[in-house]
Length: 304
Image (cartoon, rainbow, N blue to C red; front, side, top):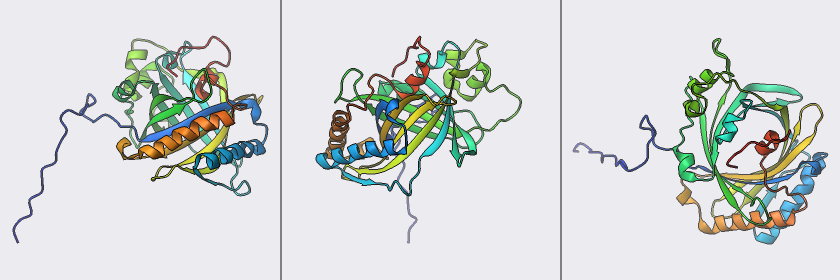
């Protein structure tokens, strides 16, 4: 038999590249979020009261919904710390930096997780921002299209693009992890924002957030578009002041073009109908992050 000749790999020379020649990250997640009033959540039963609304709307809109059992699925507890300069340099330039740790039976488990994200309403702007960290070890890129309600009325959809990277936080060396120079070394994307300064990051509004998250089940919009869904409440550590709640569902895919148009339409119709059905729960015009930043007045600017 003759030697098998492999076909040459076709390279798209027109594809956009980062400075080191790496192709732009592509959107791989579709996430829908509805911000809810934090005051609605006073017990575990509150989560499943909202699940009843999800059940009604899913049935009416022809969406299959497989709920979890309240008896076998308990809420997850996580601590979320937002870090920024005193004048909110990161948030005002569309960046978010947070540290998150999971608790089990009242104790932290595993390494804290660092989440660094750039969030913007324009896809091209979000894609062009290289969020890759300069670290030793693994990290995970999560580029999401986020569907949110309109800021001023129930029943619509607007989009944000959230370009994220996540990795475990482990102290290495003696460098100050809060210093601008350290942050720029780890996140080169912050050089235009923090370069030439001696700024440090600190806990935003001196507030540690406790997140209580309850898995609710899985939504199936057909044609392979399935999305686990959950509901959560964010409250301040210490006084347990409820900041906001959130219902969300998220689907992962390899290529945006693989998503079936009818399934996407069904997801959008469900999203709008759920807002209307749960209008007494919905809180317009904010995000979970925005609620933390606005906790003590003088809200910063953002692209949320």
